[in-house]
Image (cartoon, rainbow, N blue to C red; front, side, top):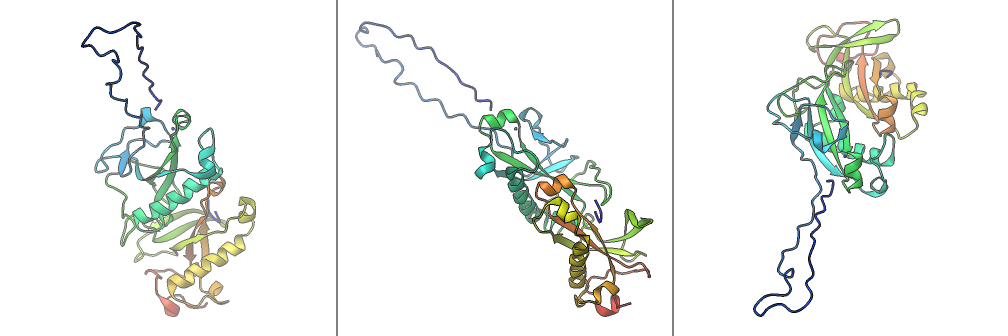
Length: 295
């Protein structure tokens, strides 16, 4: 929004007890030489594999990873283990719970490391996938961090892709957000149309602001503070002073998480500089006073 899952298989062996003495030369204790059964191991998914379908729940029956070099829709970049209060539940953590927020925090951190930047700075989506209720009851406490490529900033459709997303936001990347030409309808942004920064445009992505841990209602009622936070990112990106003149250099556009994502712990606000009174034909990164003057 702009402005905002072993079943443990238990084998039983019937041992017939024979009364009396065994014939000479025979071992009366037939079972003492039997090897012990190996402990059952719970299934845990692998990181670094891809999947043809998006999973909301990690059912083992649907687990069929494919090579990331071929067509797929999502990639598991990290597999974690839930501990603490969230792991003590009798069922997998629901949206907004302590367990979900803990897993979300770890996924955000590990995915950022894997892709080379904050995942929200590019056309990516991150899903947290827990085991099925049956697997959870059996003791599974893993969670997957699944990453997908989305169509655009305004269209979160997920299409098939080929190739791993690891390091995909390092350096120059086709997935990284850059310059845009906003389509306005009255005072709202209908669409942020991607443009090459050397083409005519009026907006540019400058970074991700980590909002404070407050309620969603309070967050959405403090838009002025969000614009101020984005102006600070603009100043740092352009290399100009973050003072009272910043509001006269550029406007701001921001996209923030929807309510459920917010409750799950996503605090990343995507910030953009916006110039309405002139056309830009270069990136404003490091442009300084000359590139983004007070007007």
